Image (cartoon, rainbow, N blue to C red; front, side, top):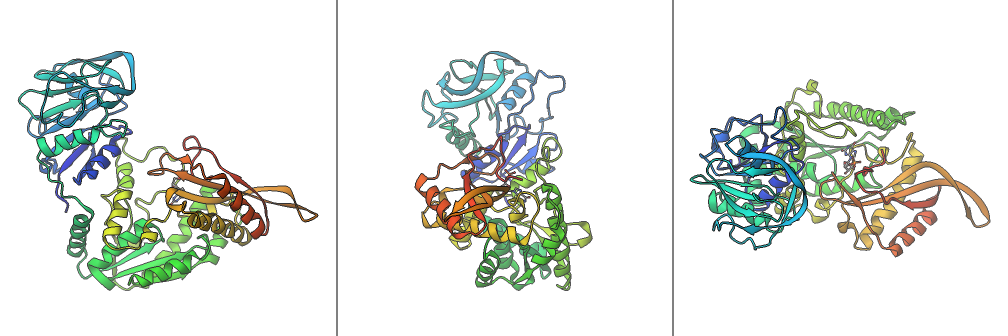
Length: 511
Ligand code: XMP
């Protein structure tokens, strides 16, 4: 088990995950729990942070957990709604603010709290995002800082290690936000900065050994970063008792199945490659609705995987590459994942009939941490730097129905694009890239012949987590060469377009 260092109570803010990521950047372990489901071991945490919230303390039934076991007993930092909650329920006054309080503001200090405000410049930029404001401080409140529009931008409670701030230290626009978190967590709460990729790997390998013992574990490898890092951790813990299965659904990138399989074998993993392309093609025949395609692929995967897993006698565990954002989402304040836009997540993934116990070595870490753990385990840089690729693969990049011919065309187009990005040194600057085969034919001319062939769209986005994304301003010369290469090399395509939509409102994938 990781040490229980920092408890972040989530009131539903869009920034709660960012608080956790900033804390982790300080090499401090933290966990997010919904404000209304305090963990049983909350006593073991050394410090507590209250998040912001879309709610108002002035609403009819505002979130107001009983924090009597925490308040005044442990160092507490209340952010935004948290700060308003502390004021409103402890003798202060929160009202609607008269001015807009969104965006940048600058701090001025009212009282010098040496520890909390150390290293924070006077005039330091902070990020505000609230419509209520603290008009009167709670009992024992001491104002520490103000901004032009917000008198009570930071305060503390006399005689306690309880601090509250109206602004968001977790967003990058709060220039000294990370310093403030460090002051609170390290100097005031005395939390040790020992949560590093090496320490995570060491603890996790020890935990897996203790949990799994001599049992056999089955894991589905996808070629992606998460399942690969999960596999290597398990392999280090239990060696050949880890049985990996890598399924070719026929919807992978060109040559990906053979290339990645070889790489896995080279890493010493006990891996079986299963080519089930035909089965997936059959399951997809005639389907053009994206959600139906996803369902067909999901079901076919379960059947293939289950049949393979059953051949491993006495397998007791199923390992999954679930990461922390999936876990947080599934236990969120609202009690479940937010509205389904696309059904693409793997928490609770495989069906009960598999009767295997679940082991998820990455369930408490974020994507960037997975990469760093992977690097500390010595996994190849190229493998760790691979762009995310959706589970249903090219099936959701071929709009409409799927045929082997369309898959073959898209694989070629995608290979020209991705290899081009690699050759031009652009691949690592892009978070995710791919090509989309449109259900549109357009007129062209090749030689003296009229053509009537397919249109492909190229998509390249910058993002940190896939939740929001912007299109990448790829150099014109690169786009020009790529378009030429695609049209000259790939039979059946006579037009290339570049997608310049951001997410939101568009999503990354077209389906
Ligand atoms: P969207 O299209 O929702 O995608 O902006 C966000 C991220 O999720 C990936 N994605 C999927 N991943 N199964 C997956 O495993 C899916 O069905 C799926 N759909 C989208 C997408 O590639 C991007 O990284």
